Image (cartoon, rainbow, N blue to C red; front, top):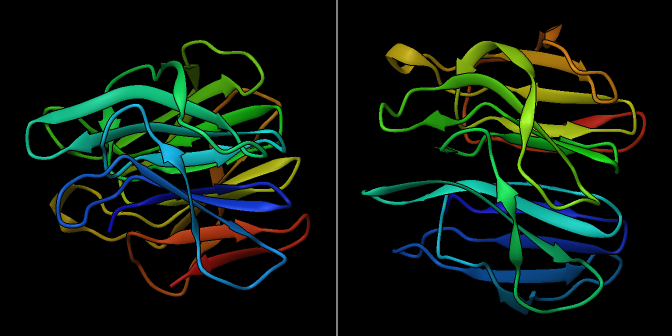
Length: 212
């Protein structure tokens, strides 16, 4: 449970999670071919509740937790075409976990929302990294709502962040939008059919999909 995913047009990557304790395992599949996953390598540390995004070349997994004691701000990266262990990319702007939404336009990666530590409440923060250049994240802007367990997806222009849980155990139906090339706050895009959390998201250039 609490895994993160990322992909390019060829491979899908799944990293981290709990079974029943945190794992550093990275698995991959070849998207064009049905079949079981294969071992890709390991994250730098065992963690769950991390957030994933990717360019055509690199996958990144940011933040996460080793429950109950440790929340993280480290970001790992790997080269999708080459199996092997992940390497350190840099740090998020602050410690966070809780499956914030990740997305990218292939150049810039965004990590949206999640838990903050030690309070374990949702954040509205959007952090930005340049995928081709290792380094620490910078502030991109803010979401409309403070929440964790969100879904993120994008095309080459627009990033979308969906759902999540906020204060008082409120599950949001909110869909929020950012223009990835331009720093700034999210704007309202619309709503999903009902409020829910721990979602998955994916997209083509024209259509986004939200599961479940």
